[in-house]
Image (cartoon, rainbow, N blue to C red; front, top):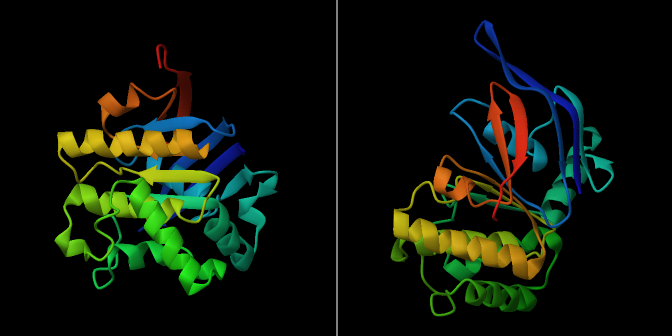
Length: 227
């Protein structure tokens, strides 16, 4: 699925150069569940952006299914993201004037799905995350946990190969955190996804089959026993 080879990312901050990633080598197989943990500013989100084709490395290769994402044109990269990668973020990123169903439908518009099919698939996706009775609700009418379920449904409605989650429980209390993790893990298993998640939460990290720790742009990966 993914193969990262000697990936570096540098960018300027004023007169300084920030080394966000330094020679990262990483393999993520089909169907893997990998959690990335580390201190703020260590490179976690930068690495996730590389995996999602949201940013390009300064050097090295980010290969997804044999294709180097860093070498694709913007049009090709947008197509790969639209078809193959689902994103879930800490801030939900829902459009406040659209209903839950309409928010989920937005993921299907770039794929040219017909309106009737978009509505049906969005309703099915929301039902799968336990929101079948909330299709017509606006984000402001939903709890934080429900909004994140909408975001998960939006990520999965296009039937991606990869699900990338950046601190998806960061804005939730402990009980909602556990509910959202249950949903994410169930979706991972049911859909056969490759699932990569960034978190600060050690209780989540300890339960992951594979844990990547990134500090000062350098990564170490270990298999978690008993998962």
